[in-house]
Length: 177
Image 1 (tube, rainbow, N blue to C red):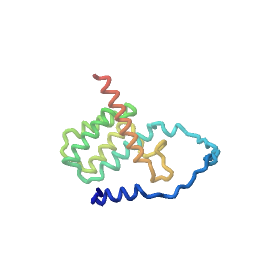
Image 2: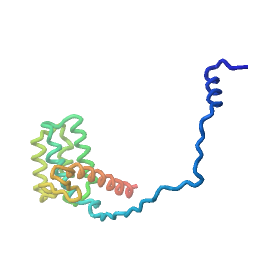
Image 3: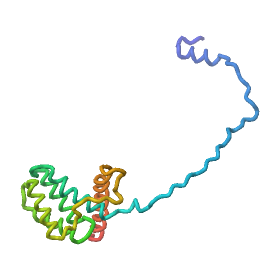
Image 4: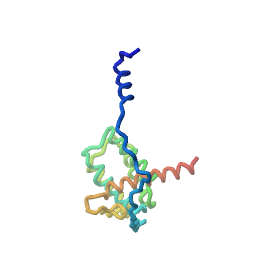
């Protein structure tokens, strides 16, 4: 009994269709293999080292250029600044004077509800001077140096700083447990 379903009818039609058959050659040859010469690349592994100068340059840029971008730091921005400085006080990589710098900034910020950009810059300059300038006053990038002066530097430095801080936090907190 023939089916009235068009789908089934089409399947039967195509199943009975005879397509021309082409005979395949008995031996199939593979395409020729290209012989490639591997080019060796010399890797300068020093570029992957964390450089303290990159970290200190990033810290200086944050303190002197990023934080004072707002004329007045208050509210949520002040809360974030206090947490940031507290975190650097506790986990900043580097020398003892660098840690002292963040310790002093943390103590100065703790009671404040707001800080103007001018007050911030004056305090950073004062603490830097008192401690013998633990952070360089000019930014020099080593591993974070870009191909052009405006490429890579700070973005690489802050990225590297955040990674260094997380490692330092892990080491300190692991030993305190």
